[in-house]
Structures are given as structure tokens and as C-alpha cells.
Image (cartoon, rainbow, N blue to C red; front, side, top):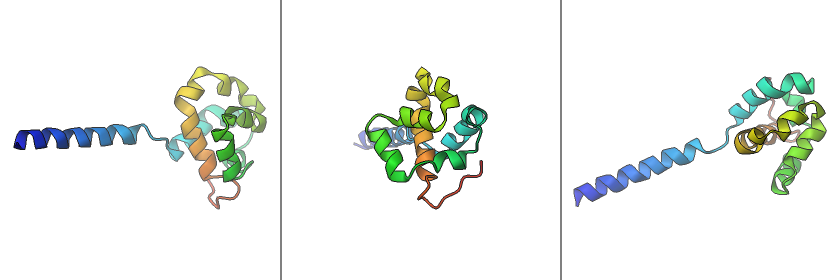
Length: 111
């Protein structure tokens, strides 16, 4: 009985750790903007994120037009946004960044 409880507990902890690693992260999005987009866009992340409100960023994500909206804000980053890695690895982090630092959020990033 004790053995089954320990196995179940280990499985729950393991799934919890896997689930948290898959979540998007605002700070990763900020670092991503600094590394991949700042030079292409020509302005800092605060300006990039503040181009829209939180509701506008959320609507773009939900409608599947996040990439198009980001290209509209930063045409120099089109090659980055069109890359397969953007959809698979970067879009969630970058979305969290722009959503958390949108024009109506009251937050200002340090980049």
C-alpha cells in the first residue's frame, strides 16, 4: 500500500514539474526581444509592447493573427516571425512579454 502511494506521489510531482516548464515566461520573452528583435525593430521592448493594449494583444493571439500584428509593429523582424521556430518555441514567450507590458498594463520593461 505504501509503495503505491509513493509511486503516485512521485508521478504527481513529476507531472507538476513538467507542466511548469511548458508555461510561457515574460522574462524569456523580454530576453528574446532583446536578442532577436531589438536591432531589427529599431526601438526597445517597451515601445514594441506598448503599440497595443492587453486586450488587443489577446485578441490577436486568440484569432491566430499574433504574427501578423507583430510584423505590422516591427516589419524588420518579418524573417524572424516567419521562421518555424517562432510558432513552435518563441510565440508564447513573446506574447507573454507584450501582454504584460502593453500600453494599458502600467508595467515598464527594463529593455
